[in-house]
Length: 125
Image (cartoon, rainbow, N blue to C red; front, side, top):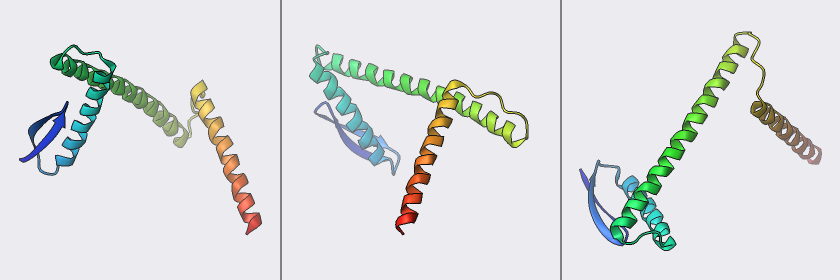
């Protein structure tokens, strides 16, 4: 085990971690410390213990939000994978939903811009 000293809320904490994880532990501690400072500057805590509890709750809220976003991405990925399987197997794909249609239009627009830029570069060469 490796030993790392991190500073959170102006206090040093000596922590053990697996070898090679020292940098990650320092990064995490810096993030926690920055969130703690944000909450402290907002004046939301009455004392140090209250500040640490609020910081823990804010970080937990961030985790829950990220999990929800990940769930949405996984659902979208599954739907797109299914669509690609349908296309690859020769089956008629299901109709595009509004968001997919918007993305497809945006990609077509960007492809047109890329083609235009490439044509200009070829003319100058």
